Amino acid sequence: MSDPLGPFAGAASVAVVLGSGLAGLCDGARIAYRVPYRDLPPLLEPAVEGHPGFLALADFGGRPALLFAGRSHLYEGQDPARVTAAVSLAADLGCTELVLTNAAGSLTAGIRPGAWLLPEDVIAFPARRISRFASAGRLSGGARLSPLIAPRLRESLRRAAREAGTAVEDGVLAWMSGPCFETAAEARAAAAAGAHAATMSVYPELVAARFRGIDAAVLSLITNDTAGVSRGSIDHADVMKRGAEGGRRLAAIIGRLLASRGDA
Image (tube, rainbow, N blue to C red; front, side, top):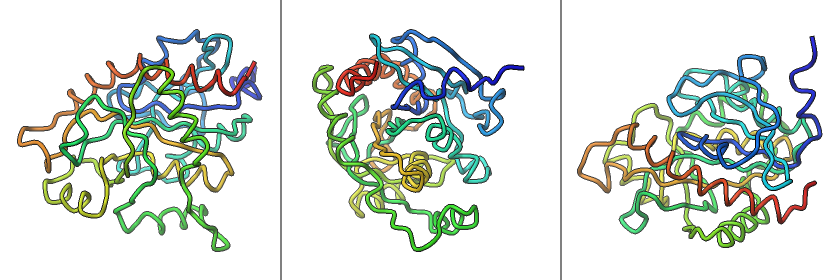
């Protein structure tokens, strides 16, 4: 039986992980190869709606990228090494840059649903974050986590978004353990700590990328207000709707990023 990863090896230098509802980005690219996660043992099949679970080699105007359509989360009770397997696989396949996309809830009235956040840093609230990675063999030798977000890749994403006609907001992303949306008190605490939006993903992958030597940056679609901002209810269906709308815009941003990289 042929190796399902064969067509992906060395095919691209940039990998993109697609968050909730953002797999619509694939509609804006030509897919050369596509393999479901279930056929790639290191990867977990996502259990959350909006994460279809496949790896694709995509072409954006003649420039390739690996697309990981969906992710698993620590709140699903999985081992951290399995949750971040896409990062390790991207590195093994020759990628040197990683764009992590995700849905996020706004912690401030100044950043509205539908906006894009380009985080400069991440606050990880759950105290278990280091111990769980350490137990999985992720941390050793006093390795340094900062900076988790690569400044050059972040600025490249900013330029790509501008060229694609999409405004981005600067700010800090708060990682919450989930699986429930933040309470109003948690949202206020995160905002008081300096965060502008909250998510249940991204941080574990940033840590994994740091230790694999891959430059990583984050692009967050604000899909909803948190309970600390909105008085209404929050539903995953709203996240999905915003994600579907954002996928097409994201495709234009990634296309411009790849054009600046000159991959052939």
